[in-house]
Length: 270
Length: 304
Image 1 (cartoon, chains in turn orange, red):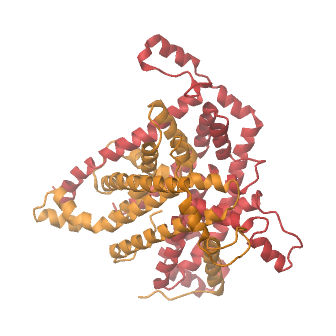
Image 2 (image 1 turned 180 degrees about the vertical axis):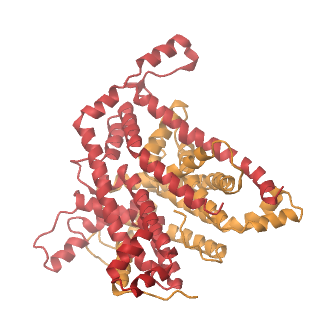
């Protein structure tokens, strides 16, 4: 039976105001990135001037490249580890330290980033590891694999387990049943997990600031140091590019999840 | 033996790699934080002492142990700066979480009452800003809130104020930033519980003569409490340790604990005090963290 709509004027007003509040600032930022005027608050006509400026800024480009590399590598490792963790938690037998395991996976989701960043840095220093690309990648993997685990686990939880069981009754061994039956079914969630890990890594300032070394700043670190000095039109352009990239990622992820959920899952994994 | 059990055996082995990873990179580092919080600052690389050298033999290890002290924690408790930072962090987190609940609840409620087809659209619309860069969203607000920014120009044009209002470097700017950044985290768990609620319950209450307000407070709100709990924890815990938002939007005269930790670490290069501040922050957050972990586990494992 279809749910009857019970919208009141209050409901509509709060939805409109809420979504307006969420989107207007980003929209304004995007519009002003095409502003010809140097003064960020005066409209001087449309222009791509600040995009030119960005592509001429070597340090920014290098930082952006570094960020993309870190995001792609950490998201890939995190997806592998996070998926394994999700499978163990939702399909595995009870094992020793299971509560500790789930605790370690869920705590980083809300743990203040200053704590995660500081603790990882102290580990890297104690190990005498050279700080740079790999330390940031490992740090981001540690954070984002938890998000992947939650996304994949919630998909595994909503899956009909009799499919796996049927495959094994028909003679598959467990690994084969997993690869042939379970994996294709959770693939969209795995893709969405990778995308989420990628954007989280691309976005992170605090953990990257702690774990990176001299000469390997990520894009958020650069943006942050510029923003501290005030609003600059070039930053508007960079931000718009990042938003565009993330928009593409979101479209892919939502297409993937559309393929995934024939029965609309209502609960978001977070 | 059932197929389910046979499947469960190898699935257990899937835990090995992520388990080892998290123990080494999430759990073990806390031991280092604890150890360094008991050390002293030194002008050296790394900037603290004593340094444990496992190759240097037993005597020097014992000497290193003896040199550990709780001086940094004494400093945190006795110095008003830190005490104030902790109090301020908690105050800001409580206020901001209350604001988020107040603003997020009507939105989530509106979403849950949309026709089913539109609910999915509304949910995507709420999730998308969460994917967009955190830093960029704060930066967008700096654009709007600055002296000759959009907000002041609108207020001036409407003759609501006679001269530009100072927004940046104030607590109001910080609260706007926090509410803006964390709103999806509040809305989504609220929406998830509200959407699952049986509409017949509300209808029954109003058929029995309860006015809408009473229906809400006696039926809807109590049934949505699990969502309220999840949303509150999801916002409160990270806000206590928030660094970026207060740093960019609030004034610099009163710091939150995340900022003092950052300052001690990056500006003063005082790693031991920064570590001690992290330990105290962790202890403050331990109870909400455990609550959150239980909630999350229960939610994800309902189907087992």
